[in-house]
Image (cartoon, rainbow, N blue to C red):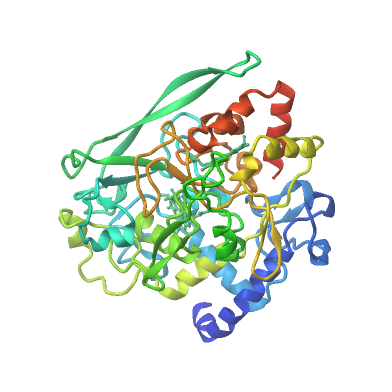
Amino acid sequence: MMLPILMKHRYKIMKALSLALLAAFLAVGCTTETQEKSTSDASKKPSHTKEKLPNIHTDKSCKMAFTYSQELNNEEEDLHILGKSFFRIPWVEAPSATTARDGLGPLFSANTCMHCHPGNGAGVPTDKNGKITRSLVMRLSIPTIKNLNNGLLMKDGFTPEPTYGGQFSLNGTSDTPYEGNIEITYRPVAGKYDDGEIYELQRPSYKLTDLQYGPLHKEVNIAPRIGLALIGLGALEMIDEKDILANEDIGDQNRDGISGKANWVYKPETNATALGRFTWKAAAATVKHQSANAAHNDMGLSNPLFPKHNCTEKQTECLEALKGRHNFDLPMERLDAITYYLQTLKIPSQRKTENFEKGKKIFTQIGCVQCHVSTFQTQNGYEIHPYSDLLLHDMGEDLSDGHTMFKASGSEFRTPPLWGVGLYEKVSGYTALLHDGRARSVEEAILWHGGEAKRAQEDFKALSRQERSYLVEFVKGI
Ligand code: HEC
Ligand code: HEC
């Protein structure tokens, strides 16, 4: 049993954590030519080949497993592997003989983290046959009554639907009815590039069916979300807050049409407000915060940061099923292990193909880089290239999901990092981009850009066919 040993060494492990993160950055990239700028010789060390997983962190082109840093010492490696096991194992209903992983539900969306982050890559809304996957999550909210001193609002950043809660659960354990099903309809949207070439996008609309707990609130807002790829989270956490805030331009003072606003969110670890960095609306401050949130909302696992279960007062079977459960389904040690696993995953190296540099120039010229900021320095001195400013931008009505979260309005989203985006297809078998996975290609994702990004979208449409292909080649190589 690994846990007692780990607990004994927990202090040491935590101390070693910053070192390990440092090592993880050193290990970014595999061949020097694919490095934008190598900050260390460590990237030239021979690769760790102990494990080869079909994983976003496995870059076949350079025959190297990107699963974890070879610089982790034995204890750190144990913690990483332990975290990985909790990330991948299917959880089961409590009580069960396998107490290490029971406590699923009573209401849940999927029974393993991996399900919605296949290969640690991005989720997809529908499978190849057009069937809805369990990785599509629906956030439910109702309008917030201003000046209402609502503790939930302070913690969730929105007002949950009164019967179904803040997230629609597609599953329930034995005696607890699931909440319902989702239907998606895609309608074609035709468009034309300036050179006359036509394209077709797909606009989704959603319906919640088979409602098991009666009708939804009449003003309910339904906001779809797919799982994000879990790349470089430890590095993003290590960016100095002031470097992120330096790119803020609330109210567009410099009049370039692009503002950029930080989200300030509730951080359960400190019971205080903090800068949001993670999720589509930057509503989570830390990897641990979002991992705990996922355990609670997506899998029904209570934990020290989210001690309650995701049943509402109206869901009696759900509340009944909890009787007799006292301890956390996911105790702090396991939450820490999952967090550590995600923090120490490697960042895929850039794949510099023939027209990469040409595409990069266009990316800068047409202003993609104003939000998809290429470079940050981490607090421990490493240069990273996430291609995100981690700030919120108004993306226009077409992308709006009507869901406010803390300071993010319905049409505001965090610029998602673009590193590894070209590998999604290889990892999960799909490219399903944007917060709801509606875009089937990088081109489609760009064509949906509106609001503050409208000008960049128009400039993209005005490019020649060849220039467009250079730009996309670059994005896929980031
Ligand atoms: C039912 C699907 C589902 C399951 C299960 C799930 N996730 Fe997620 N995950 C998502 C979605 C959807 C998002 C985006 C959430 C948002 O934007 O509000 C996300 C986002 C995240 C992020 C933020 C990534 C970033 O770049 O901002 C982390 C970290 C994460 N999940 C960790 C986990 C962990 C750990 C587990 C298991 C305990 C887990 N997830 C289980 C769907 C899921
Ligand atoms: C005003 C800021 C802004 C500008 C300018 C901008 N983007 Fe984005 N980009 C975003 C935001 C915010 C999203 C997420 C929107 C959503 O999910 O609804 C996004 C999403 C994307 C995605 C999908 C990523 C994913 O993981 O799903 C790609 C690809 C992308 N942008 C590429 C580009 C390119 C190429 C350009 C230049 C033509 C560009 N962007 C210009 C803010 C911007």
